Length: 204
Image (cartoon, rainbow, N blue to C red; front, side, top):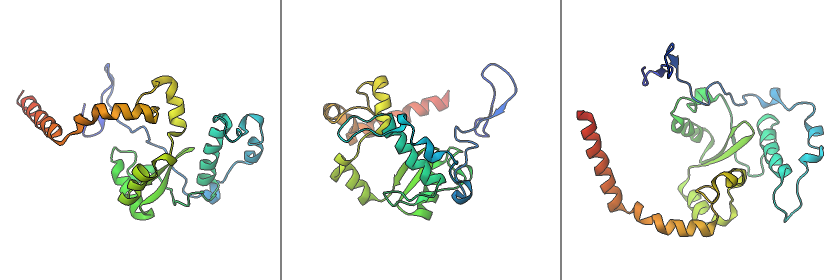
């Protein structure tokens, strides 16, 4: 099997197959005016199970569905987003997001759309931020205005208070415990160990 050439053999025999990315074949919207939204769109959102919860109450299914609704309407309906960030659209394959070089695709989008833009995959959208000052504002000065979103809620039953669903109090305790592992001297030691082990492996 030739990994570098993106050709791999089946695990238990068989003909070699081309290795494909999970995103291979997926295309983003290229013309939202033509694609548009289906005729039943507005009627669907009047169904009882899509209703939003009341302010101050825990999030329900309708709240989550309306997040997806907004994302879909921005992608296929040409609706403006509340945040005003430009929406990156196009063919994912040609942007480099499907061949293992995602960073090149993100760089291309940054060149076209600036330091803050929105990247959408199906009904889910992501804010991509590259500006150092904006990152500092988000991660240090304005950190309390962000939550873990739907992903944190979904994974809480599976992971408990693991890395993604952990609340602030849990995170504070764990952060103190792992800080020594990120000290420069320890990282330098680990790099040298990786180099030594790699050297032994190459001789075998």
